[in-house]
Length: 121
Image 1 (cartoon, helix red, strand yellow):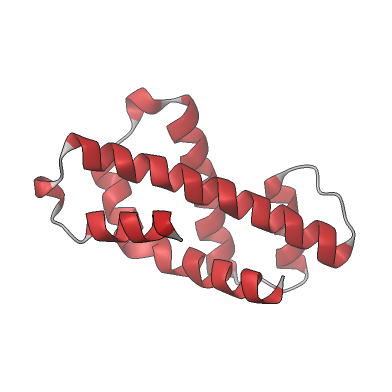
Image 2 (image 1 turned 180 degrees about the horizontal axis):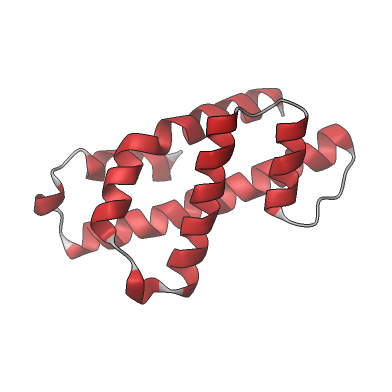
C-alpha cells in the first residue's frame, strides 16, 4: 500500500502548496492503485467463484451480486476505474484540483474494500 501512503501524504498538504511533481505523483499512484485493484478483483472472482469475467467491471458486478461490496464501494471503485482510464488515455484534460479533492473525500471506501478483499480473498 505504498501508493496509498504516498497519495495520503501528498493530499495532506493544501492543494495550493502542491508542486507539479506532486500532482503527477498523485496521478501515477492512482493508476497503480487502480491496476492493483483490478488484479485483486479479477483474482477473487476467478479463484473464489471459478468464474471468468470479461472485464474488471464485470468482475466487480459479480462481487456486487454476491453482496461482497457495498453500493458506495461499487460506485467509488467504478469511478476509480474511469479516472484511471482518463489518466491513461486523455491526460491533457485532467483537473488535478478535482482529483485532489475527490481523493481526500472518497478514498476511504476503496481502501476499506481492498483490506476486506485481501483478508477474505
